[in-house]
Amino acid sequence: MRVAHEGNAGKNGGASGDLYVVIHTKQTPEFIRNGFDIFSEIIISTPQAVLGDEITVKTIHGESTLTIPKGVQTGERLVLKGFGVPYLGSEHKGNHYFTIKVETPKKLSSKEEKLYKELFILSKQNQSIVDKVKSAINR
Image (tube, rainbow, N blue to C red; front, side, top):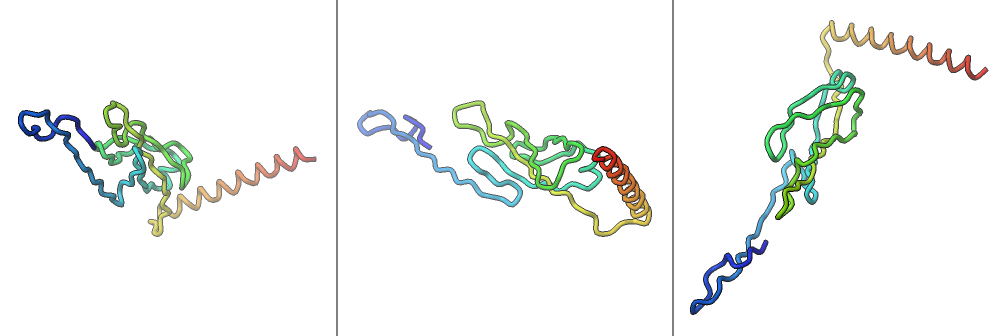
């Protein structure tokens, strides 16, 4: 980056030279930069994906709140606009994109397993009703 007239003074009273600043950015597993945008992956639970939630996420500007919509799927991308890298000489900033990863539990308590079984049975019953309605319509 060049900063005009901010370097050393010129010889024999001449004008100041230009200052050149070299900036190196370091990639981290947590934040991936692409231009002015930042990309991260966040892991949420199945109930958070089904019901939605508000979670605290890390950004390059500190912590912020991200709203998880009901029914979000693994691989979907949510955005915090203006939480990316600032544009030089401007108030504008890029965006911070969060790729959703829904984590399936590997171990359940007996109560959790019972509740999941109830949900499974309900979903099968609802699917059966939908199939019956489709059959009736297609006659």
